[in-house]
Image 1 (tube, one colour):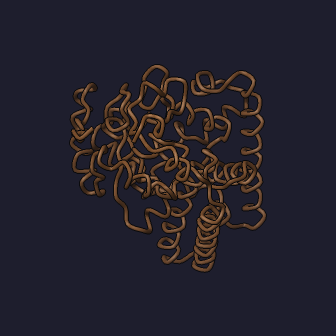
Image 2 (cartoon, rainbow, N blue to C red):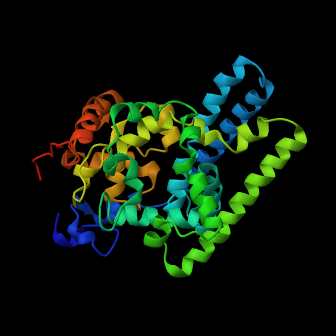
Image 3 (tube, rainbow, N blue to C red):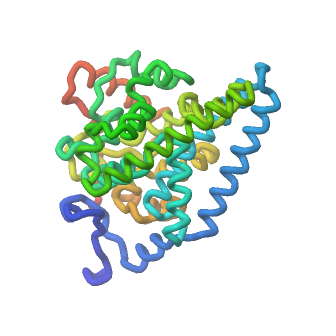
Length: 338
């Protein structure tokens, strides 16, 4: 392959500093093609399954069966995070309008104020695991130093109710009242802050409508189905925390700060292939449904993907060590065949 047939792809003005495998231009062009069929297939299956589980929850409301179906419903609801992410990159569909429409829907489901998260996620890709500029999206995985008990209880469904003072609900309310949070100050451009305030107020208004509807119907079911599922979507954290947990900060090599894992087909669907996370960070304009193909092309230059057991086998000891030594990080073995 000649130099003219290959390129190193970046994502920002500092991209030439990052390590990235060299990929043939034509191959990369094919990988970055958006496919409306793939996008719609995921969206339709996802919302059909979510609606079906919602019907089961409604039918079994007031019985112990509700608990089982509700945990499944909340787990699938948490999959809106993957839709938010894919549409935020505008890689789910060919058209910007379709991506943005589902981006806003999924943002509401995730309690992600879309303006704030558009900019903080852009920073996350430009400066992954960076301290300065601060990468807010690895706050809970690389920068935090939790003790092992604090780490474990985050997987308990409903635990978020006890941390509501640090939740995204609070952040949205602060933004709705024009309170400038740290993330707003450091991530959002001045000319976008007013839009952040407006969208936050819309979100709060919808929350109030949901609560009023619940009162009118004299049932908490509406709140359980539309307002608080994220508090119970803690199973999603099992694979979500593997992205960067315990890995190195302030590095220009995604293989050292990011982790790819192997998931079963159901979890992979909910996560929309984001288990190929190193690959995604290296080439963020490749749609998630093409990440398996990308992996096959560059896998010789990547650490071998772990299953969840293998990932947590190194994550849990890292959490314990990092609590005692904030400078500790997992040393990743990089393939030598460069």
